[in-house]
Image 1 (tube, rainbow, N blue to C red):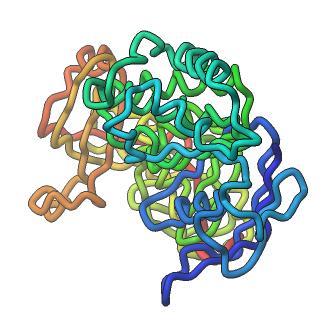
Image 2: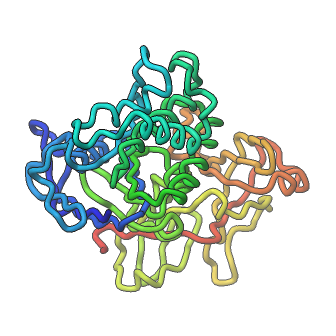
Image 3: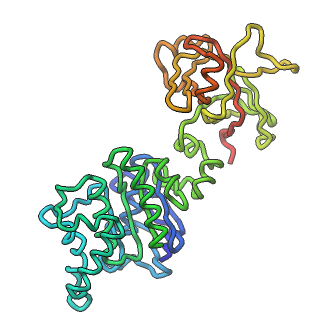
Length: 372
């Protein structure tokens, strides 16, 4: 079922939870609403569900306005982070619950319910737990049972609010893969809320980045990662280094560095921000006297290696601009430059903490203040 969200706004007192949000979700899509706490993603999910009412705007299911449609009539399935199972019921009875409370005219026979529940438990790969109680299950198993219960009523739309938020990292990763496979099998339109960018990028067909009640960007995981539409998106998706400087006629001048930025050819000494991911920094040893290219321009940023974390195949380097004693003393996070290089390269080069190095961006994304 397709979903159209049209100019939806919502306030709680003086707080603007949503500001004129519009979004189209295709039938059978798996969409992630991604953003920090308080950005409006859960409020939007609850309005789609019918658990909250928008102050303005409308939600259409398959072209039909659902504004006046009660939550029970929307054919929506829910899985919440703390959507507790009924503790006094077995796993089987939990999954059967939604079918057994249907109006008599729509309620399947007990034989049909039994068949359906066993099919769903098989689908979530937990049919062997039918007679157990929730207290006898792991957190990951409980969430899969909650999902089976949501699917029992054959929803047209599946809504998941931080479904794996209370689970540990290893279980989350397993359930993410499992949810993606399950969605591909069922093809039900699904929307899930998360603040975990790795979760959104790994599972969703498209990612909706939200910030302060607005949609910042919508796109495939690859699109939003490779082409962030705003400084917020760049900063939210993964680790990033932020450099401040000035843009002038297609070049950005940073401290110790100058990079071409032809997309800002019209800029006249404008304030600029350059975002560089840690793996896009080249790191080399500093040679006294170096620093300028043939044209007399800076070739890199001279830094001191303050910490090296080598775990697995990657070496993560924490660096501070040379001579920046404040950053070293105060451990000012904004002043730290993070670089990532292969662990083998780190060992081959023999870098050690306290050494002076030079970093140069291979690629950077520049935003100019006031430019659109």
